[in-house]
Image (cartoon, rainbow, N blue to C red; front, side, top):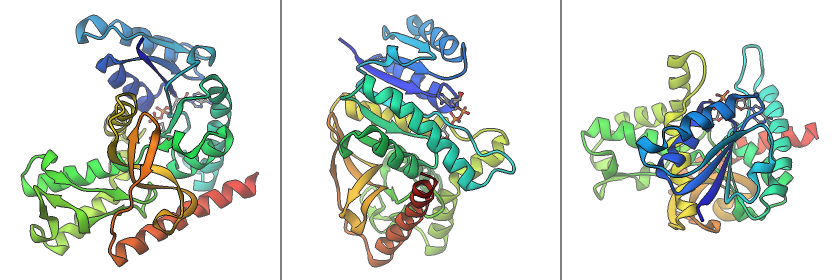
Length: 310
Ligand code: APR
């Protein structure tokens, strides 16, 4: 029997992630959205691509949750984007409500599943999903670090004219302006990046990585990135379903690791069939460790706003 993956939110990120998972053929996909017809239409269109992309997986679209029962992974992308005149806190509280209502529906249907949170602000939404689901910490994980790291690797590969695959790097911390590209452990074919690029060029690539989401939004004008985010989701789903035990930067619940307690922040984890099987503690230099703690503090501010709102 094939694995089953539910994707909630049939917008740009959700539908593209569903497509990438369907194309691989190793999991049936259930696409859920509140808009009538949208998930059904996209699912049918995707299903009809099966003979061409050689996938026998089943994909269905629905406005309900019964069809999601016993999913191995539930990817949550539902939410709204920030609208003009809306404050960051308004967005936070609106998406908090959406995540809460979706998790209340999916968690009882898939009590043994793994929740993969994508909606922004990511770290705060993962925290909310953890609280509402009551799932153990290893079965709630957020997607951000792979995306931020992919942007960093893309820019470095372009600068150095080498394959993206030759760049080993990790971007940690919260998914926002305070994210921490760990320059100290970034290597190109085993050579430390600091030997290949000036501090000035590195700083500008770090800055471009931190502003990576905004750069896309400014170009698109309406909507935000989805090709790279959906690729990152598919990589995480594959690591779980194929029990790859891959070391990837993801958002996970920390209990003392990196000096952070009781909070979701982006860190290297071992991702496999058990979800977050281990938090890997890198040796960070003093300034990187401080940057990570600062980043965690900005996630904590959002979590506090949510707690005060009830
Ligand atoms: N239940 C189900 N679906 C919902 C709900 C809900 N309660 N509320 C909103 N949605 C759906 C919308 O109908 C829409 O189809 O979520 C979808 C969001 O899609 P888009 O607006 O296209 O947004 P997208 O670009 O996919 O981004 C989704 O991922 O990367 C993050 O910042 C991004 O938080 C955003 C999320």
